Image (tube, one colour):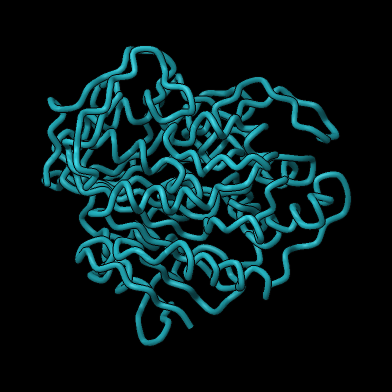
Length: 409
């Protein structure tokens, strides 16, 4: 079964007030991306209205050209073709929805499954070069009722919410905007499409009118989808002007340059055109040596002080350690043998992240003493507890009680 292969690959790979649409400016039709979020604003990008920086409608600009609202049977996972959205191999893809009539709450979940930036990493991610309706249906059978998707559990913080499933088939942690690329060092040259960020723009064109009355949006994802949820948070918050927009990043931790090598960050920037998809006004996100991605945390927490932003991670995540390890020894792993980052080094990087970048009141974290990877879409979501705080309880505090807390071993 395709989804079984994908889940197996993900275990060795990197893999998240009412809305007033009339107040949001729009950008002209084009590639589906939201204007103003890249390093160079797109043509016709609306000027940002004045505001006080508290994340309310006075500060946001949508830039989304609304498409057709999605209609689907209630409380049933349904595939929606989005022909403009492309996978790494150039094939079309789409999204899944489970609409819950009467709810104004929406969870947008980004799938995980590796990253493609050199021969070894691309080989891991190759099973996710495409994603079709049949792949989605297989996923529903395995995962569509697990973890945060379980509608039977009272302790599910997202029970009764509208659900959106964003597949992962672009190899760029949902953050790329570059077409027709040959990956450096790939033994079998291919015409790659790193367009995960562009795809999110196409999806938002359908999702914004579908959930025009959204009061609360949660952006979440696992592994690559956790990184993607964070890297797309700003544009989702802008698209859903005035709504509460909460981030829950599961197993996609950014780290300071001392731990996440600038040369590895530079590879991602160059290959995926990452600098063009980072917010234009986050100057600190673009270090001269390629580093600085961790400063996006500070950027988001300052820009959205009334929104809740949270991270879930194992303290020695063996999968993310594998990928961060490619950057050690001046990125020797990109051209030769590599070893995972040592667990103690990963833990030190996570401690540094918590101490130096998660100090604001709107930031929360849940650190699990483990080498395991991803939690929110598995049975372990309901069986994990740290310092007498069950993981669903922490997430409920983040999402529904607006009380970000730090839980650690």
